Amino acid sequence: MSKMSLPFRNTGYFSSLICDLVEQHPRLFSFVSRFPSIDNFLDQIEEKEVCYSIETRKTLSSILKNQYAPIKDNKVALSQIELLKEKNTFTVTTGHQLNLMTGPLYFIYKIISTINLCNQLKKKYPTYNFIPIYWMASEDHDFDEISFFHFQGKKIKWNVNENGAVGRLSLESLQSVLDVFEQNLGSNANAKQLRLMISNSYRSSNTLAEATFKLVHQLFGQTGLLVLEPDTPSLKSLFIPFILNELTKYECETCVNKSIDELKEKYDESFKPQVNPRKINLFYLTKNTRKRIVQTPDGFSTVDTNKQFTREEMIKEVEIHPERFSPNVLMRPLYQETILPNLAYVGGGGEIAYWLELKNYFTSQRVPFPLLFVRNSVMLIPSKSAKKIQKLQLDVVDLFMKRNALINKKIRQISNIDLDLQDFKKQLEVQFATLTSLVEETDTSFKGALEAQKVKQFKGIDNLEKRLLKAQKKKLVDHVSRLTILHETLFPGESLQERKANFFDFYMEYGEKLIPLIQENLNPFSFDFTCLIIED
Image (cartoon, rainbow, N blue to C red; front, side, top):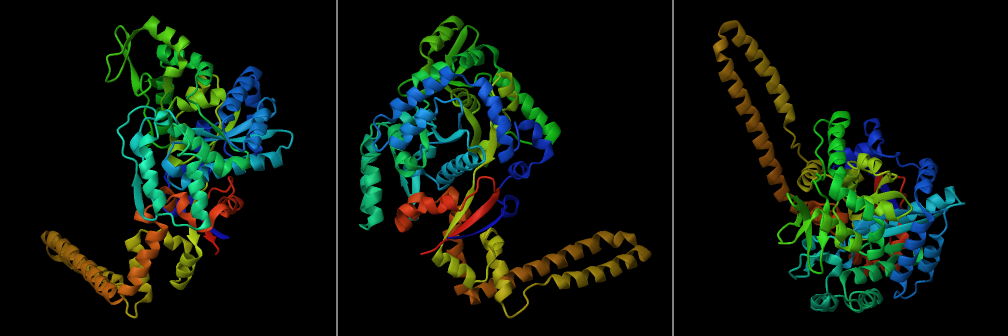
């Protein structure tokens, strides 16, 4: 496998905020604990060590041990769980929704980035242990976002009406979807292995959380990754003080709004927050629903229901049933950092953007703010596509152009006539400058007419150039077709491959060697977009 890379900023697919963060722009310094470098981890370790108790370690270890008890081949996981009891053990975490069949490719890259980061930390700080964690977003209730995946150019969707926590969903209605999916897999060794993974996860689980847990363990269990199900009463018990604080003091809203104002003042006055806080940033969980909690004159209620609580009733409910309270997107990071001995969070651009709003909130809660790492971004290029790229004499940067712009550039390059009429514009500029001087010396009332004529002439040249290019495209239709097919392969729907394609598309071709190959070629401290050419 060979690789090429280019800075995020040069791809055109990443926000200025994320580009500035990975480039460690000084105006963002006050919104992070420390910039992501391996030397900054020692200070992060010392800060977390003081705040994370032995009692919490024991509770976390016990819960994880129970969660892994039903999992086959769990020796590596149990060994990692034992290490969590030790005060010199810390975690690096990534989180993601419970997408079917892992969803978009970047889910895999998030986990690999997290595993690689732990491995590099162990080399740098051998007296400490570093454990990668996948935090399942099992309490999320946006079923539409996780109800489908793309495979071999088709969208495979699970149609069911649900609005509760997705991790609790029954898989009964999913089985017929899996039947259709498996019928199209073929019968080679990789297809058989994929069927076995499905059998050991979605076919042998009662809920989506259980199935996702098992699937991720099959893919990454031997690397030392631990999967954590946070929708657990014992873990929620550790979060009770913060739930009560949110219901009575509204500090999340106050602190996040302060951060948003500071980002506008210190970083960019046009900054737009990724997430805006609410007065209360909690949901109330029942078996089939997850409803937002709002304040009322008499206490609290849940949106779209008749459920009402007095202030005293709500406090009692938290103390007796903390598992019924679910943090929203802005409080979830605090829940995570409360229950884990965590040092860093690895996320995508959108996630890291809202984490940048949270530093003040963490300070108010006296919880250390983790280092923020933008996950590795990757495009997998099969060898067949690499040969086409070479034959078409394309550069890496060319691939990231919008499709029509790429085709236009290439058609101009390979045409045996000059389709660029910009020189005519330059000649017209000289002529109209002369005419302008003449008008100024005679009658300035002609200025408007002259300017209108200039606009008309320039527009005519642009239209002529477009028509010539269109005509040339017809002549070179084979080149256009090949470019279009290649670009669609690498940028499906004119989006980054990692945001649409599914891991198992590539697994069907390359099998079990794929994850190790990707892992060997990614560096969590290299904040570039990586293009990996997979050899046959």
